[in-house]
Image 1: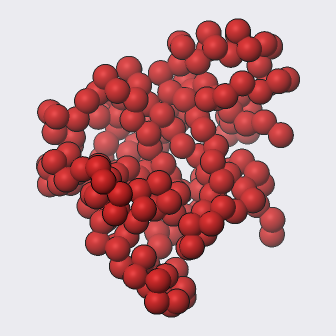
Image 2 (image 1 turned 90 degrees about the vertical axis):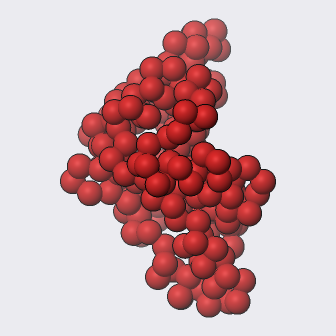
Length: 198
């Protein structure tokens, strides 16, 4: 079965969805220990959350990139995730989706969240022909994320390193068994219409 170009794939339960971030240890370790971000975490900056584990691995180099050594699985409420999607603007202008470039820029400035679709990745972190969701949270959205949406924060750095070692050794079957169970995420019809393009 072929994948649509734009579809959210995530690990989720009836009430939560898991997203991934990577931070330097001074932020990531206290966050995992306390279940909330420490005071040093800057809520006035845009923070990007990613439902795709392998896209996070591509972004943080399996937790080896400087400043991204601690990989976090952040379980947030589905209500919060829905709010973020509803209040998001697409991160780039699309002719036909937006009336004009100026309208898109005004929308982007007002939106507390933004959506970017990037190629999903395989175990070798090579690009696949369909896209993975990234959500950028700023202002009100970043505050809601930190203070209201988070259910749990888990340090998954060791899992990232274990998957990477299995890929390096060529044992892809064993590597796949360590991946989170990501499935197509259910969204109401039309909920992504303002965030996708052909």
